[in-house]
Length: 444
Image (cartoon, rainbow, N blue to C red; front, side, top):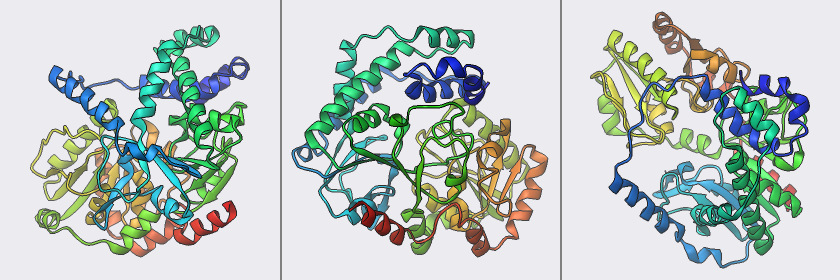
């Protein structure tokens, strides 16, 4: 059962539970992962590593601490994983260009994912770790009995989500964000993932502060963060979504009503300034073609991809399979024609390759706009559910069996890169700079 089936079955009950507005995404993830077995046993973190991690978290709280003491008209929330090296500085590919174009006093509150960087394009930047710390403290003193109706329903499906803990955390985060917003009184709050910050969204709306989300990944009919079959309270969702393209505007049952396509600064930038890396090219030149593989983080997802790559690599020794890590770096190298590449970002690596392959990573959206076609492994039908209504079959092929791999490769190698980009124009709206300036003029 997925979240949409769950909501339809318990529609009458759930629409009466206020907390469902922010608990539903957590339940959705539990349902999704519950249907898939965890094959790989997680390794325990060594004791000394745990100590180091805690010390590092404390240090991160004071990252550019002095920037907390200022007056700001806009506040952005992002994370360091979105930073790419641009002209020798770490550039947030979603937020920094908008901050620059606003040309107003703006604070960026950044989650270290996994760490902060010293040389950042954004100057007024602080760490989300400090907010997380205060939220944790307040959570200790927040007491809530939970939602018995919801808890009973989840027990029937053996979903081990701690409802009381989740509600206490939401209430604590709402308290902290309310204080933060009352102190700074920003005109607008920008986020790159609204369902990661539910307490912030409602605190802002209760203070009559607008919330704008900058799209960070795929939004499709299957993304439960943006689509629901039941009536939900609008105050739990952003007022505006700055989307990649026009596809997001035509989805049914959208939770965010105002959608403005802007495209992607970084995709346009890297496409226009791309230069090959000599070391990677040297490795690629030993093979007939190269395939860049973007990863997912769940254990069952990693297992599915590894099994598929292992079979492909063994049967195709003339193809180089380049694994592009996301967060985790512990990848088994099980064949000489499998390479784990960490020296470049995912987009740079994909641009070196003939084809991009994944389970259902959002890189599937971006690869065609770089002129690179997709092979999507349609295990459990996730790839088609996410992308069939978004990506053009000209440049994106779905395979379920190993026997389909060779045929898909041959077909995609015949495509013209300019036509691939052209077929993806509705996914990434062109002329990002003009779109952002137009949006900002409307704001000001």
